Image 1 (cartoon, rainbow, N blue to C red):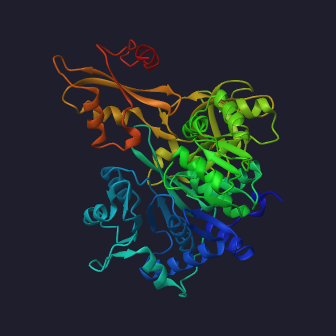
Image 2: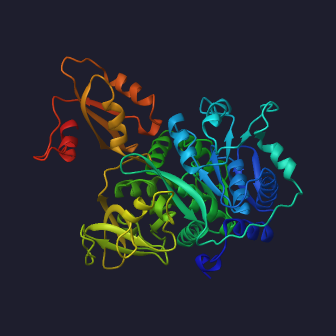
Image 3: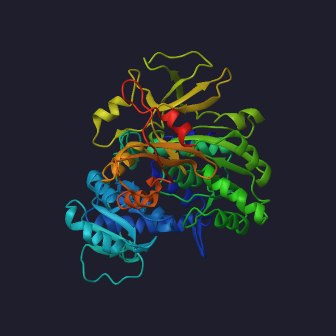
Length: 525
């Protein structure tokens, strides 16, 4: 029986309970010298849920998770699921202003964070933020600090100890209608939008992906480096739960470390964005590893050239599958299968997951015939509930027939395989993260030396696309590219800071005044 059928109607909590009951001693997570089984994660999630319940956290409340990839993220995620609460997974590298915005917008009542990481003192950061966020009542921290001085801040381990063996009210959850995760993604103008994903959204996509990849309990997954990302949540954490596979976690996305972990733990399936694989190929040319255990590499998160697919397969000696993933579709929308013809695995993103319908439409909304290029529109169990607190944005993102409009251009061939062609929306995909030019342009325009600016994506072998800021200076002004980069770094997350700065006498424009971005990309190359 297909996993999509077997787990129909399950919640996130019941999926873990099912696995922990059937195979409690099987290893779920590995991080450094820590090894945790399904039974141990279930036990700790039960205890943390009881502790959260004692604090008054209940169904519908939002719990923010601001953590690097670690077991505590996973335990907190399942604890929230057991209470019927909603998780808000956040990138720990968000700037303070971005973090403040999403915490306020999501109305999170509790946050779980690490005390120190990436050179940031998160404990101090939250102590400064909490007085400005009246909804945020509690903070759970992963670390060793003595927190006796504040009755709203708790150590993660203390909460688990306090909740061990205690009961809590069972949550009544409608898996298809109740939101489990609010995953933030940039909007068309760079403003974050909270994508509401139900239990069914995430489980269906995780199950469909696991089926397509042929995952089993003997698999060990490597390359899951961003648990706050929808791919880490679904095809990563949840796909593993559904089949009983193990996940090898790592602190950061580092090519050498990923290869070393794959060798050390006999990884069988390698997830990754194109940037990671490009870096790994360079690492392998300098020092080979024994990667004979690997059987499969799955590339997702950014556009990938077919030549890179071929190089990954040759150098890692694995089958390579390309996946098409969106936040609004709970991650995987389409993916190639191992038994697909070689040319389909190399040049397409495969076929849609079972139950997922794809239409190719033109700007008027009319469906186009086979082999025609148009916007990809999708409907199915993985499509989001909507954008949190943004009903107009939600309505605008769907057509009259209820299909979600992806903003991506593609075509369906006669055999039903999806080919990605480009993007209708103005977005740069840098190292797997969406960057909307307008957000970067707004920051640069505020510099006193800048007259006007256009931000474009430039093809880059390592990043997929590099961010290039094309600037026209105020007459007589003097500023360097390094100064522009430093100016951006003050308020923008590192993933949004320009990689390149080019100074021009003027920006090429159309008769109506719009910047000719295609021409601009040719000018600055």
